Length: 360
Ligand SMILES: [Zn+2]
Image 1 (cartoon, helix red, strand yellow):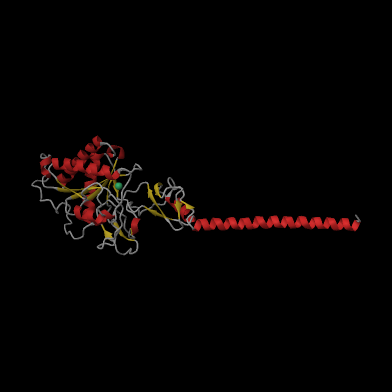
Image 2 (cartoon, protein in one colour; image 1 turned 120 degrees about the horizontal axis):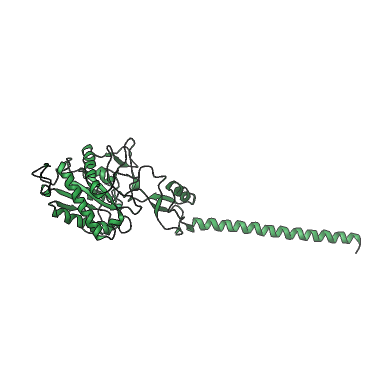
């Protein structure tokens, strides 16, 4: 080969090499673009996976969920209008790894909140604001230092409200605009609180009380409104719950506690002042025998319910109550699948109500 042809040959080879590299680069770029398109398509067509949120703080979980194009909501059954950002997530639905579509909502339950839904609703049609008036003929005797025994309770009508319903619901109470839907509660809570209610009812009746329950069977559905309507016919309402995060206490509405529809913050339902003070007495009377702390209602934002500015929050059921009302978050180990423990709690509730009615 001549020098010239050698040079030409080398130039040709170099050209071929350059073309090959360009081709490879092109393929790589196109492949990358195609992969990106596939990922985007997958994401928008339901290939999203629900992240694991249990154990995270609500604020962090919210960021994580929203960064994936999903929404998060606190379980409507939880009353959670206060500071919830730092509370940890104990349950989520759908479960981690489940497929989701963009804009789907992940429902979570937070620790340290009690459920709102099982709380009775209110009944504004009852005018009897006085704690004990509604259904109970006045007992013949008030508390006399020597007469400390049970017979005094005869004719007292007490509402026992077994927490939760066999299904979740969402419904607006026309009187207040609040969502009074109920839900299924923590694992095992529905059936165990029904059993506890039966035992408590029997124990109270044995002590001379008349007892009304807020539903007819464990699985029945009863809205917060329906529950309040029953409770407001009674001298006092005791709600039975447990929280599987270990949260316990006898909760009652704080003074000035109120709820409102989130969409209409001016439409506040404020707990009656007489109800808050009598509820506090009731909570204190029960907390002793039960060995639990007296706590404020925890309130909540769920299901479109909010807390009006300038008011502490409270349970929707408390806002609706016209009579003293408490929500017991029981010690789960005592009342879950533990008939002996349930018997014990039932008698403690009788003791607490006896103490309350002896001074009211
Ligand atoms: Zn509950």
